[in-house]
Image (cartoon, rainbow, N blue to C red; front, side, top):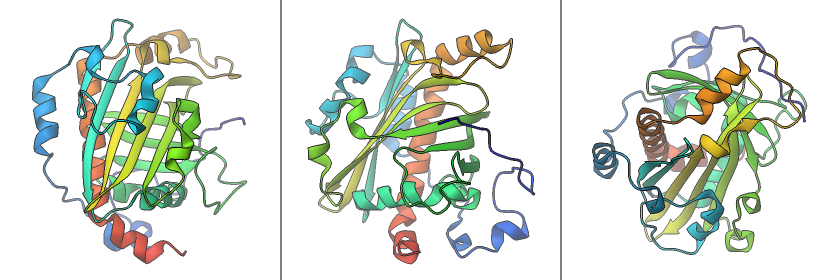
Length: 280
């Protein structure tokens, strides 16, 4: 599939709900810019700084996430000699089910205003790459989402191509019951340049009082590459690719904090918004 950049919208991209168009939606009541403080275990991981690479799971061992109760590092990050980073985030979600997350990833990507609910202080815009062909399609695997979001103070133009869990080495038989577990997997890169940067995985499994999410990111270094079948469109492409491939502690921290914030924030109202809109 040829990926294109999203078309210009009638209103300029912006943070928050601030126009009549933003407010005139049935889900605007779920927009809440007052986010909870960073969870103590995430703040501790930020303060601890980078860890040894062996303490975070390699991409090739991603399947182990389904077989272990806990891994060596559930929240933290590592910087590898090849310029890549590994990031892990653990999020507890009382009252949430794994199936709610599958619904959310299918539901929110067609409307920027839905996407902003997820992280009201960082999400700017979202659109499916194939929106004009499959408008209203209730799935996300096999599709690509173009999103603009802030990671720290840096505005990122991201391309997220969702793939089946087996492409990251996960046993899909272990994910057969969506009420017990799910895994959201994707190849991530830039939406405004033909560059892939890495991979993400969100493993959600049932707990006695709801669910927990175990997020993993492998970005930069050997995970970065020119997107298959996409010729370079800019003389600056090698320099851009070099920046994408070289990760540092600030980028890792920004990604870890962003993930922790957005997952905890959405989990706080996901049961309610799922109940309200799951049949739309």
